[in-house]
Amino acid sequence: MQIINPATEEIIQEVAEDTPETIQEKFQLLKEGQKQWAAVPLAQRISAIEKFYTLLDERKDELAETLTREVGKPIQQSYNELNGARRRIEYFIKNSAKWLAEEWITEEDATREKIVYEPLGIIANISAWNYPYLVGVNVFIPALIGGNAVLYKPSEYSTLTGLHIQRLLYLAGIPENVFSIVIGKSAAGQALLDLPLDGYFFTGSYRTGKYIAEQTAGKLVPVQLELGGKDPLYIMDDVDDVNAVAEAALEGAVYNAGQSCCAVERIYVQENIYDKFVDAFVGQAKKLVTGNPMDKKTDIGPVSRKEQLKFLAEQVEDARQKGGNIMSGGTTAKGSGYFFEPTVVINANHQMKLMTDESFGPVIGIQKVKDDSEAVQLMKDTPYGLTAAVYSKSYDRAEKVMKQMNTGTVYWNCCDRVSAALPWSGRKNSGLGATLSYLGIRAFVQPKAYHLRG
Image (cartoon, rainbow, N blue to C red; front, side):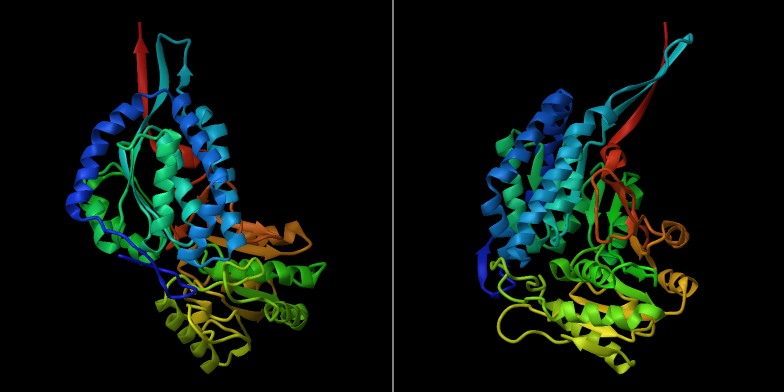
């Protein structure tokens, strides 16, 4: 399998893909290893994760460079991702013992009662390429702390990062028969679905997530799906600083070239400030630097997958044909690499695919609305339910909108944000289950009830 640099289109490295036979061998190795790992005291398991946490910082230059070369994100954003991953790991280190401890429910009666949390067993972590450290640690860190073994399949677009993760986990003291990487494309993923695993945790597209849910339904094991979104942002006319709001909205839309499940994908602006907002937003978009992701001055790197260029171009052309005005960008950049210019389409509407279908690129549509009621109607017009954001001076006014959003996360005066202390979950086509927070710790264990007499 060839690993290609999306900024240069050069082959970085070739790696051997796993076969169903090698994946079966890895599974058999983990079967015995998981039992041994579950018997290791919780404090000792957490200690190994603490060493991994330290190694991510000690090796950050090598890790960031590899991430930028194979995924294409600007180098500073790669460092940011590593720092963000460490903050999440720190949360798990500090909070897992509390949420995995046995709980006495009744101690005084003739029958004492308690709950004990046991590992699921061997789980599959089928991960994503856009934030391989962030979405990965959401799963394999609490899974390992909880006493599970992990078959970890990184995306084929972030394989080298996945190999770094495995190497550092082993250096940290995670046994080789407890964590194993599966390298490959869809065939490798299918081989994981065919195994008798004890849980499946996937991050990626709705289509693939739905397929995984269907394929594993008969196993009656936990399945969690962290899927995509078409996340709306609504700007009310009472905001204090339109320029600052435009800056925040732009970053939410194009950070990591817009390749984020919780990126701002559509913007609604109240008509009283629409023109002022558009001027500020477009002006700032035109200042973005697109180019070599290894240059710290670069804001926008390439998209990670070549086929996405055609998809984005078709979305923009569809918007143009339906009355949208392209105020910046709109085309692929010249030269080598998978670069798409940061694109702003105004006078957008829901007849355009740009406002209804997930983009996953540095493109954004802006639509004018009359009032909060119209904004809510448009924000809810989606099969997705990941996040929704509102900017307003008034929390009470914003809260009325947020309460009507059928999403796992809502934001007031911020966007495109994840906190380790809060659950990350989607509704409708945005997924099932939750990672992060104490819910994301307990997602990898199962309760056992004890009824005790005598």
